[in-house]
Image (cartoon, rainbow, N blue to C red; front, side):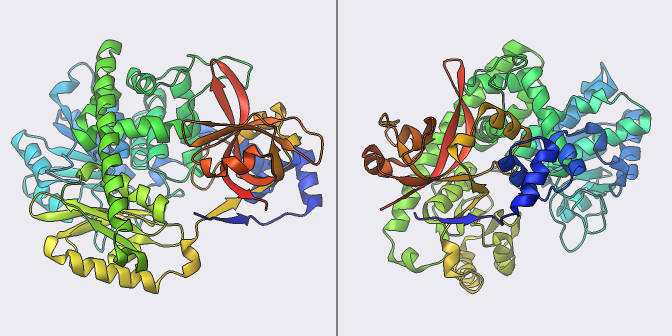
Length: 587
């Protein structure tokens, strides 16, 4: 699939030179700062030096005082508290965060007073469930704290109230027309909340809650600081912006993961086959460390797999485990779930692609709404993401769900707000929620065809033909000779990377392969690049899934590249490597 290369706005050379000189960094790195809206020495200093003391006061969040007071009352009166969260990474890390915090605050007898609850993906679905409320009632819980869910659970909150159960909602999703009648709602995205930073993850909201509790009761900061590893995992896996508070939280969370990880996280890292040294080697930029990308591609999927294949309770159990032998056993089990998940999603993706390619109808549609009753509900979101990559259209993948409904996961392309498209069809739905690029929904099976047609009509009216050509934003053109050890050292200071602070994409033109290129893994190209037209040292590069260009490259013909500059560790040796995102052949 051809892609558009969009070079970001250029800056005046005099401005670049002046800024680079003041910061004592290479000019390309000054360009990266300027393109991120960082224009002053103070802003650059804050960016390069995340400071935990610059987190916002948790009591700036609406209802924080009420939430802390209600939790304090429950602890003081020995009430039973149920910590409730969604079955995905954000929900399970949030539950692990609050549960472990409460166990430390309550002390030795904590198991008498707190439990955690993760709804079953298949029988209860997303969010606060009726079954969960009834569990509270039947087991004499008087306070339920929901994490990463609840902002639209009006009927479930009313049910809890009727049983004499209070609910504190800690969420980060958009509110509905009316707010639930909860004891307290902590949600920075609520229209009535003026908290300065709006992009916290669900686990991040949970962190502000315990930070507020510690502040109110003059407890050591270490009680909440020690949970930043869980917040970093949630930030990475929930794909929230890594700006502002999230940048600070992710930065310090990664330090914990790399220096003294909790045994459950260490188990996941080992199961993923990542070999790192604890603590990392000092005074070298070439020491393998866990980064946001590792959390996204290796740690998060394994935590998610438990809820997709079995139960999210396993993930919480692992994250709060303090015994290395037990954590290893749980980690192996979760890794097995992840293997099963990969097999299921590979099979379903292949079936979906074949269905689409065999259908004349899909060739003419601007959206893909695909139903198959045999697909596992736990992997349809992954399948939807794969189909977006393959066809670059808004995609909704639907399968059967309990209670006579069908359930779907939606994923979108950059130029289309899929939440708005689903909202447009809300009259045909039973439930829905999400955001611009990802959403979930459920509906009656008899409404499926009408929904598909109405959604397609909305897409046709709100998207342009050019929007179906994926684009890659290019930060700047870079000379391969500028990629030095010092450049890499300074580039690493831009991390952690993620939404709104993505890893820079560089462009280099008219490069050639030195003659040692080869196919690896059957579909990737491993090579060493340099310029034909000028003297340059060859640099290692890997082009994943771009075997189609190998013949041209092997013949040492010129081509242009877009790439990330990364480190690659092999046999305990780490080198600079270009991770090539796209290749444009020069004919």
